[in-house]
Length: 361
Image (tube, rainbow, N blue to C red):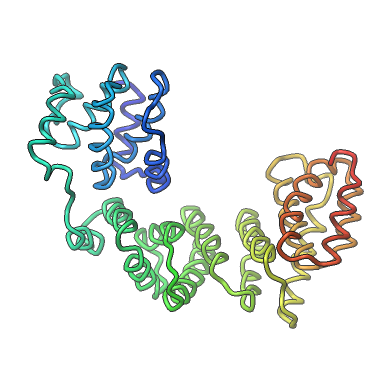
């Protein structure tokens, strides 16, 4: 078995999942006629969603359509057909040399038994999502399937599961999954907000590095839900003890919030402004701009500080005094320019005027 095949099987057996919702949308939006010679990407993307129920139904539909257009002329297409057959249980040993039944037999079988294109019922999928006996990948796959038809119940399920902060593999996976959960129900949003903050604090204080990805996911989703009146809660993730990536994620969330809204007045707001200003002064330093990571951190610090109206003049002068101002100024101008289109302020106008004077902008 080749290294590539072994790696693919290892990922599948471990429950590897690409961002399937995005991939399915990409496949669905492709034009009906795919130019010959450009089908590799299509079949590769289609294969990534093969194991899901929705993905299987989509592939069956696309298989029939492609067969009608006589597109199955390449090795990629033949492999795609074998994968489809395998997913339907017709050729379980095809990797060991089992011959393909052929696209005509696939289409004929589908036409003969339309039920092959039907997945489990909603309640069966819900049972899989709720079952502690199922593996985490299988439960997440079930929730992914339900997102397209029962998104509100999925959001309620996730919010309920995160109501009590517990650091388990399942809760870490659920927190990662929240970035795909959408709901307009304000009650569910508040519950989700509360659960995400509690888990973010729990993961922040965890001792293993495996808690970092769910921590950063929790911060991103939390920042998308938190009202401006509670935005100072992000101070809990801007401590000197926090990892640089944790602080940067919190700053990015603050930057996104302040791109459309202004900070309210208050003592806690003053503390937040002071901390953001401190971080910006620290990172706007030529000695720290030697790597893309540090430059990105400096950019986020500066933009968050300007949008928070925290020592805007001093920080802008410090930025313009850098030997490598071109690493920050153009991107800052683009970010702050988009914000000005939504919330125009005199200080923002002044900053953009100063940034426009740099020779590289």
